[in-house]
Image 1 (cartoon, rainbow, N blue to C red):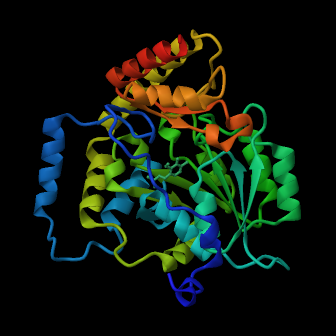
Image 2 (cartoon, protein in one colour; image 1 turned 90 degrees about the vertical axis):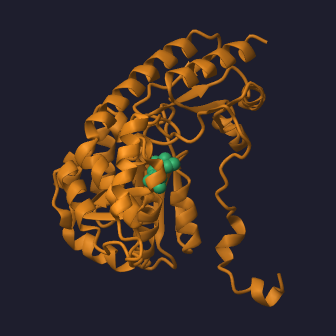
Image 3 (tube, helix red, strand yellow; image 1 turned 30 degrees about the vertical axis):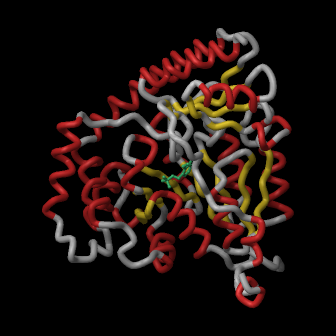
Length: 364
Ligand code: PMP
């Protein structure tokens, strides 16, 4: 590119790389925390036929009123507390676009999150020129409260992101630690990202009800409908009204609005049955992996497992790929992540293929 054109780009882009999922074709893909198909082929066909009646020449409902109504009923809140996005990725982007006025004497707005955690908090924030503070999780992969409180004191954040259950470490953040962070950051927006909460024993809605600065993030991506790209946040109506100003007009396509509404209103029992199957599979897999010498598995509240391998995870990750099984490895990040793999809990047959491959390659 000509230097004159290159100079036009935000300087922060130099430190970013595009998000590219692992390429190649693998018979067993347990790398992206997708869920197995929820609906039978016939039920899925019927559902897809229902969108055949949509007027494709028309823009979608700009307010996504039906969908927001369905989400509100699902979450036991009002539609005025709901903002929808093209996946929760877009909701994260909207939050950061809106909440970027520097605090006090800082030069740029600050985002506080943990590490390791979901990478889009950092990428989205850096793309907007925001400062990002990442506080390492403790030895149990839980929030390190003291360090979080110190970060809040020394670099007052605009937004705090806590993923619970956390990606990639699979556990919930302890409620009392989350509460301590919320209290310390009462002049900031605290986003509790519950992308995986449908697989967990509890959610953080009580914190939402108690504190006006808490925002809850949810998605349909992890419970069988990643293709729809539907995510949302729940926040006080006055916050939603401000955030809605940065939402693109007609952001959510009409097929996604219609299908997501149907999923929430008519197919949730099917989703729940699928969640129960995945949770049972999760425990079965964890037990089997723990039987292998040198492996450890964190107790999971999500639809994936966070496992420590007997030695550096790279060679194992490659060997699994050679057996046709793709998972996520963190060996490239080094340090305490060098021996960590993240494995999605999939269909029983895929999980069996993974367990079989893992037993084979770790016996070598
Ligand atoms: N939050 C967390 C914690 C995630 O792991 C992901 C997906 N990797 C997302 C949000 C984004 O999900 P989506 O945009 O598909 O709703």
